[in-house]
Length: 284
Image: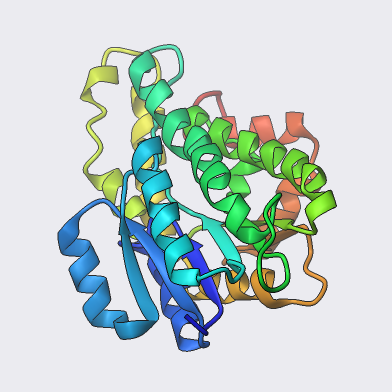
């Protein structure tokens, strides 16, 4: 395989799909992970010979390692140019009432899954194994929620805060191999993950103090999802993270850069009050 190759986890929809679309158009060969054969066939039809599906769930270590063996065979000794750790889910709910098994699932997919994929594919990037070509890069898809956490999003935000720390530690651990680690932190993106807010059943929290605020947050999520960036916009930034001669360590991509800047500058107590009043958690 002569094309520059990358692995992207979770390409069936959303950011992963947008990244696959952009990178294949720019001459990359994309190995993209999906969990369903129907998605594999659909994407193969859409992207053609520039795309190879990998069938695995990111939490299944044996299946992920089998996917890595498939990629290794296709590379035939060449270096994998990039691993984009994108696969993820979003679990929501008030922390005091959230079933612990849902908390575990969130961290298993969004955080442990990144470790599973990184361990499986890092040797192909040139980490500890002689390959033909320059060392590759790891791009971890975090979120603006990896620096600023909203109420009722503790599972998701915890996973992204954790991913930020994981990325920083890993970047320094991989210095001897020349394998860089870059974080891409999107704001709202027009993906199916936002539409799921409309399907979220909040009735199990109806008897709690949080019920009115949960409904306000649900409506807010639906609104910002519709105004979100197209997935391809994040794909372009992922391409920059992979291809730039001197990439930043973290790229923030948001339809509201002013809002992101505010969360970076305002004191946390001030943000607490603003958020609390907006959701009705405290009196306005």
